[in-house]
Length: 215
Image (cartoon, rainbow, N blue to C red; front, side, top):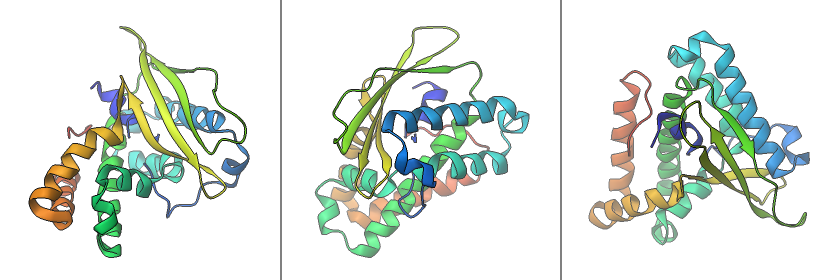
């Protein structure tokens, strides 16, 4: 997967956290308008900041926390990736697993932000009814060289505001790509084993220069 796509794969999407409160404007925005605004704000911020382009960790993390995380539902993403194992996990395990997965997604975003150069995002016409509470927003990333890259988002409105809970890059949904990894680790070492694996991975990423992490 191209480095830039690690940014958009995860918009928040894309998620990430339900413990973070979205800005008041989000409740009044249509889902496609929300995703378009977030995408444009992030890309414009990166292009305007040389420190971010050069990999300044503090500024990159600040941008992720300000522009992306409030609009992504990390808990729902983690629940879907864990599948049936989520139902048998304790409240403490759910909390820890969500935190570690959220942190991994933060590094995914942060590591890719400095790779943005001349990309632009083009959005497709929105499908669905105004009363829908679960929708897909379709777009494509136009790159300087090569074919446009398909990029779609799934959003839900469960508590009065839209949150991104999955992203499709090049035909693959982010949550689905983690499902087999989660299931395999839980089957071998339980939920605590998966939490430890994610925590170890995040510790490794925290000690290295920002880069889009491989799964």
